[in-house]
Image 1 (tube, rainbow, N blue to C red):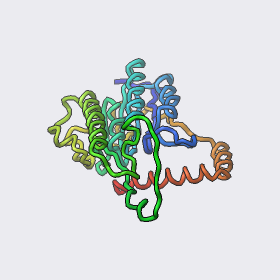
Image 2: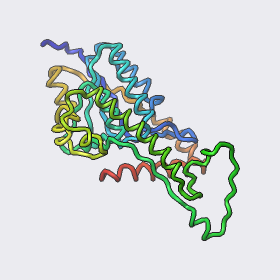
Image 3: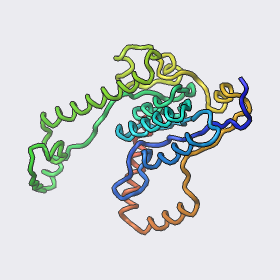
Length: 274
């Protein structure tokens, strides 16, 4: 097949934790608000033959995962452009949700893929309050308003509500994967959807991905040696980085918020040895 020298492969990087903006407006991670322009520009660019999603994410918000994936599918259908995903280090949980927005998924042999499940975590500080002699007072309307309050003893009804929500979210995740992967899945549900993680090689055996390889070589093999790559990922200018970093450095709330975000991010990535 003859490929014009002007044929272009658009690249959009999906790297980081999937979350909306933080309460103080600092950049929270991957979310549709930040990615919308990049995705639209990539799909609408002249002579685009395919879109490459470079995924490197431990997951995060199921809502943002669905919003981003749905936007990719809507644009792909509207523009009739194929989408390829290339997993770098990690596509876990919501990261794999994003990957399934592609028509075909590739990874490296040692990429980590999976964690198709739902988790909710918190802490209990009931005994700590007693030890330091603090009496906590709470006033509310609605019996469930204090759901999973860490300063109150755990209630069975609270746990039941959370587990029901998790069950719904897990079912949505599974349905999305089955819709996108279909008959390519090669294992039973109890194997694929138990939140396990696998190497790229094993993920291919299970049908979670289609092949092993990096985007540069795979795309040239499919579309020809003359194909060009154009990165549409959102970039922050040097001026904006310097201006906002110096401005934010004077705000103690933003410093603390960013520090907490970094710690949480480090904990999430470290779960996978990264």
